[in-house]
Image (cartoon, rainbow, N blue to C red; front, side):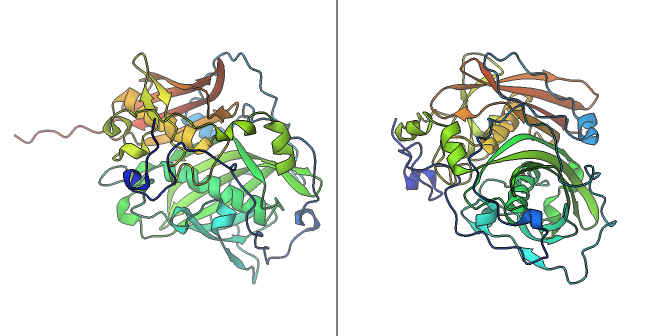
Length: 409
C-alpha cells in the first residue's frame, strides 16, 4: 500500500507508515534547569542500568475517580506482564488530592515556562501546559491554554471542547515535572500504566477557550532509581475562570535509553518494516471530521474494529516510534465508544484506561467493545485492545445521552 504524501495528508506530516529510522523520545536538547530551590533528591540522576519492566496493570486509581466510572474487567491474557512496582515514596505518606486555594507559592517562587522538549512535542501549538510554579517538593501549579481550534484536539461539537484534551494535558504536565523537578534525563523513555479522568462537560465550553486553565498538581507514589526517577503518580485538578472542569490521575514509569534497548531488544529491529496503513471507517462514525484522524478500521463483526496505525500522523506520531503510543490507544477507545454507542457527539464525562503491554506496530490489534446502559441518561462503553492473544489495554468511557428537544408545534 502506498504511503500518503504530504499533499494527501494536508498536514505537512511525514509520509504515512514509511520506513522509520529512530524510536520515540530521541535525545532532546538539554532540559532547562528549574530555577527554584531544589532538594538534594532532585539533582540530576546518575546513569542507571536497571531494566525497567513493561507496563503492567495499574493499581487502583483515586477513589473519587473510581466511584464515577466502573473499571472494566480485564479479559484473560495469555501473556503475563510483569507486576507494577509496589508504591514507595521518598517522603511522608502520599499527599491527598489537590485542593485549590489551600496552597500558595512560596515568596519569590519562580514561574517556569514549558518548552516543547519538556512536553515531548515537536510544535508549540501541540503544547497545552504553558508554565508552572513549585508549591512544595510534591505540589505544583500549572497554567495551561486549551485553544478553540486545533488540528487534532478540535471542538467536539459547536459548543464543547474535546474532553480528550484533559488527558493529553495531564500526560504532558507529568513529563514536564519528571524532567524539570524530579531529575529524569532528557532522553528518558516514558510509559503510562494507567490514566483516569473525570470531566464536567458542561464546563468544557468553546466560549471559555480564551480563559487560561489553572491546574493544581500533587505528585505521589514517587519511586527513585539512585537520585533519578523510576516512576510516580500525578493527580491534577483543572479549573477555568474559577469553575471546576476536570480531575485526573495517571501513573508514569521512566526508563533509561540503555534499559529500553534491553527491554525492547528484537522489536527495535522491526523499525524498518513498513506498517500497512488500513482504510479507516467513516470519520462521522468515529466522531471525527477528518479521515486522517481515524484510528479504527473495519473488522469482521459489529462492535469490533482493527487498530488503524498512521505513523505519519503529525500529532499522534510526532516522531518515529517502535510501538503504538498510549495516546493512540486512548483515542482508539474514544472512537470505538463513539462508533459502538452511536452517540453524536460522544462526550465522555469519565474515562479510565489501564495499559498491560506495549502495542506493537507490526501485529494486528483488535479493538472490542461492549455497551452498557447502567444509569438513566448515560451510556458506558467498555473497550478492550487485544494483540497476539494478549490484552494490551482496557478502558471504560461514560457519556451522557443528549437531551431530547421537545417539539413546540
